Image 1 (spheres, one colour):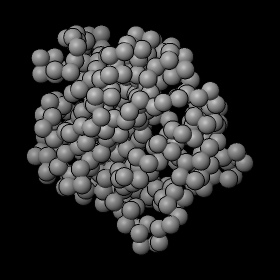
Image 2 (spheres, helix red, strand yellow):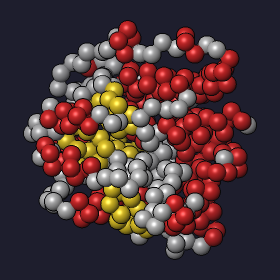
Image 3 (cartoon, helix red, strand yellow):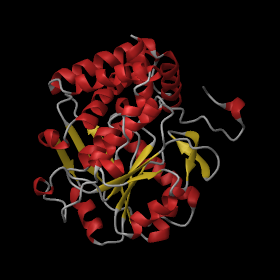
Length: 349
């Protein structure tokens, strides 16, 4: 039981701490007709973190959890989804802190739901995150080509047209439970780099970073703004999710599901600095859990408009619309409303 709870907590802390960029790794460029040119694979010598240094007893429990994930990643897909639902259900009962955060978020964002409806959505959210845990294991352990037959897309032509203009593409996203897997599946159709914030567990961070480097050419530290801007200036596609609470600094307080939320303004600033096209990217698990759908919007017109607050409101509305399609697949387990203008005492958690 403790292994499940620990892994679930690690997954919750890890998933939202990175963003994707175009210009990355493909297992075999010949298998990917959407890539314009072959991409060199980085060697382990200059990219991967040696794991032998984590052989000490302090890491044994983490190793056990990672081995558990790796083993499950090679089960049949349908069985993995069922196991994921089971893990999500166990976490619903065991991960009390995350359940409390999730319940508060759902009450704030869906005040129209009665108690029974709220409990159903809360439970479905944990089942979805349990499946998300299986998806993390799969994309860290498997070749994304293994899942191409499970992927459908819509609006991909909008992305391709924007990329072809060579001004860079700012791809706005949101923190769904399919985030890690959705990003990996994206590489079947377009190149990407990633940027990330390190995890507090050194072994978990090393495994996570190594896994991502197998799918993407560049791994850029989240605070490296120059690196992000360079990606856009070089005509790449920057995936950026502005739906997390990063504090009051560089944020404006605007509605998110009708609730005041600190919303970062970097989205419009990135687009303005390079005049890059801006699209919204969403990724959903099919209703029957048999596959995934990647959806791309048309290029946003008149964005940015020059008003950070108006831009933030517009992006929040777009994200809200996407979430309402499959609310149980959103990552409600994070404290979206932790920063309040009235101070820490006003936090709803």
